[in-house]
Length: 143
Image (tube, rainbow, N blue to C red; front, side, top):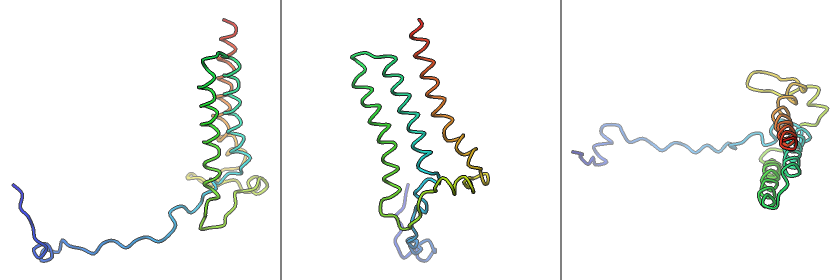
């Protein structure tokens, strides 16, 4: 069975403590994702190109609405982070410009990454998805 403990007993046992102090520091220090906007737009450009290839390759009346929904989602995935980076920031840091990005690279969890490697890592998956879409529509067209 359980017993009720009154406040005096808990105080005597030292189990009542003061509430934690509220942390007033901003929760997000960097909202610009550490990459130049051109690279992020390039990644979303690959996704839009993939959707365009799939739309043209598998054109059907029944796919109009799903493809429109896909385009809206990819646009939202590009627009919302871009807008979030500029919404009432406590800091005034700007996104990296390409010259500074090429000169310094970016700081990652494993150390400093040169700009060429960071660009390759960011754009590799969207490019592979685009090439997969091209291959899929080519195979479907040949069959």
